[in-house]
Length: 107
Image 1 (cartoon, rainbow, N blue to C red):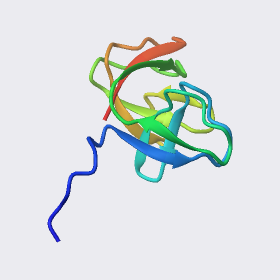
Image 2 (cartoon, one colour; image 1 turned 30 degrees about the vertical axis):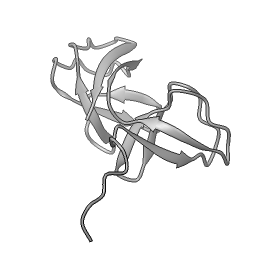
Image 3 (tube, helix red, strand yellow; image 1 turned 60 degrees about the vertical axis):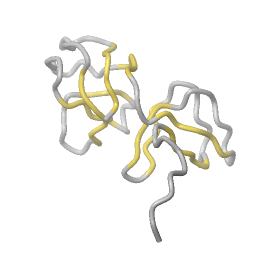
């Protein structure tokens, strides 16, 4: 069977195991993205897989523009630390240590 286009691939759907708030970073297997709106527990919703977002930053270390960005699921924040965290994209701007927010490009 030949491949048949079914969408742009810029979004994916999830069934929320627990409630997801608008703006939450969502990890679903090897996919990751940002919920553009709230998704109730048990409901199906769309997650944006691409884009430039501002997110909470753990501030543990500085990160250069273009450096890999990771998701720390325990702290529920973006981090520059790869150990035990999921790669979600790149820093769109430098992030300072002790900073509380950062800009990331999902990849």
